[in-house]
Amino acid sequence: MSDEAVLSDGTVPWAGLLAETVARLTEAGVDDAEISARRIVEEASGWDGADLAVHLSDPATIRGVARLDAMVDRRLAGEPLQYVVGRWSFRTLDLMVDRRVLIPRPETEEVAGWAIGEAERFDAPTVIDLGTGSGAIGLSVATEVATSTVLLTDVSEDALSVARANLAGIGQAASRVSVAHGSWFEAVPGELRGTIAVIVSNPPYVGDDEQLPEVVDRWEPRGALRSGSDGTRDLMVVVDQAAGWLRASGSVVLEMAPAQTDAVAAQARRSGFTEVEVRSDLTGTPRSIIARK
Image 1 (spheres, one colour):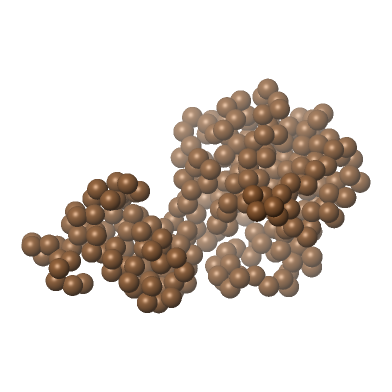
Image 2 (cartoon, rainbow, N blue to C red):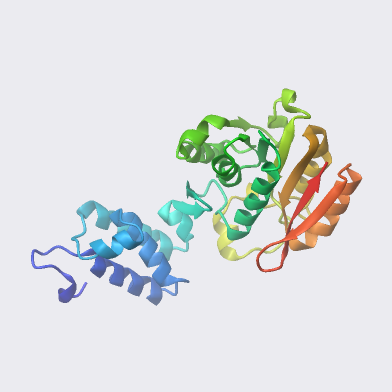
């Protein structure tokens, strides 16, 4: 820290720490060093966005500096920024995230939007988010569709702990959300059979031997990524069983890899869905199927 960056009373302002963090991450070759540095300083200082700009000249606290140093060390070790700061935005939500769940991604925000659109076709829809992870999709439905009732399920108790933490942060909408542990439809109460308006899922869809970016393979949970030799094992389980759980004109919304959409769409038709559509994301890449009963 240069002498110019130290205040007259010997304390260090957040501006100086921000500049130092940018320099350290840049020197280490961290991708998007400036973005990482700003998010880390925001988390350490407690000031977000425009508020940080107002308080950059404030002296950093001892506790804040210690937290910043710990986060910088984690980022320098290659840990994704989302896990380092412990939270990430998803549509209207600010979600807690850590290594127990996948990092929320923009393409999944689109899938959540499609599920919301399907739910809005009904007056009081029951929606199930299978394999919920952090709860991102299901909690988005609950907060954006005021008449919905939502069930979050996951086979991972660790993931459900994260989902419950995020559920606690959505306010009054939480009263319309429940959580259940189990593998796919095993977690769904039998009395819901034939009553569900929308089944949505971002299941594992990466082949067991498929190469992933090193940062994904190293840090994100394997169980939420890998799904058999071609990555479609869990997708097919959901598609094969979904129709029996849906009400008349109900729909299933699934995220998947572009190369999987044709095969999953064909399986949906064989499973009794009468209207099957492949949706592309904002980049024009096939990303999801929506199948209506």
